Image: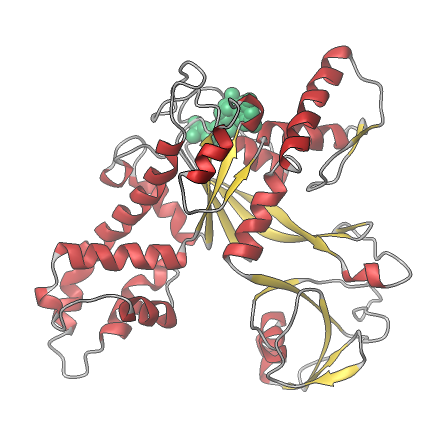
Length: 395
Ligand SMILES: Nc1nc2c(ncn2[C@@H]2O[C@H](COP(=O)(O)OP(=O)(O)OP(=O)(O)O)[C@@H](O)[C@H]2O)c(=O)[nH]1
Ligand SMILES: [Mg+2]
């Protein structure tokens, strides 16, 4: 499963985002380092279910009236402070947790009411833009430290006649999620000495930064948009080259709880909601305020941020394997039972392997269930494709 990690300074709202997105109960409080041990749970990206092209909606827990929710893993780690890569704050351990992430959501406090350490300050007195860059910097320097500490082994291996820099660096960084194509592409874009023994610390840092950029892309969430001064989100947007999503994690949490309690009609990612139950004046006021923020930003931003991370930064498409190409069901009659988030450019054999190694190895051909036509091995799958794989290993 794809892993999305929430990173950010303390008190930015990471755990609030996490609770809203997973509906798990975790500690949330207005002081730094509330979270110490990482939280790990399941959330979803949202897309249009292919069942919208049929007479009936498929139902089931992952399709609400054609809104399809595809599971991804979400990681909530402790807050990072400047100098974390050297052990400041809660330090390195939490950067290590990011090793498992495919993509990072950097949660910043757009209200400017917490300083670099996450301590409460006068609203608007801290510049949220400061918090955008330092997370990236901490991640880069942390990886540079790992490369530094292991460079000796690269130097040692370089004495062998079979030495291959690409392969050796890949070995060093696979744990970090770097593949050989990643390393090859990064090395092509860098200038460095042939002999690893004469690489400088700067050469290694350049390598680390480029690998980090490629393997841990970042989307910025301008959280607490409900409490942010006018123009704060735009200023963040103008000040960074990263995608920025305005959000109210707190608002999303309130709506999901309200939906659970049956007092609001809201599905994650909707740009508005309806009140369906009896509310106190206080509750109504709270919800009205959330509605105002949603109107300004096209929703609470939580779902938008998750979708941006997976569909835009990781460049995925949702593909639905089925066993029955006319009914779009699996062997038990469930309609559109599974959804896979494959990299753009994936082909039917890639889907087969994603379903199961055996299905991949026994791949014979594939059928596009929409057209009932066979598609070739090299056919590029698109968002929403419903595909029957025929395999010697299949049912
Ligand atoms: N106004 C507003 N407050 C929020 C929002 N999201 C979170 N908060 C508040 O911000 C404070 C910190 O929230 P947490 O979710 O604990 O923050 P964190 O980033 O996990 O903090 P650490 O675990 O300490 O690193 C709490 O008081 C939350 O209620 C939001 O969207 N709007
Ligand atoms: Mg937390």
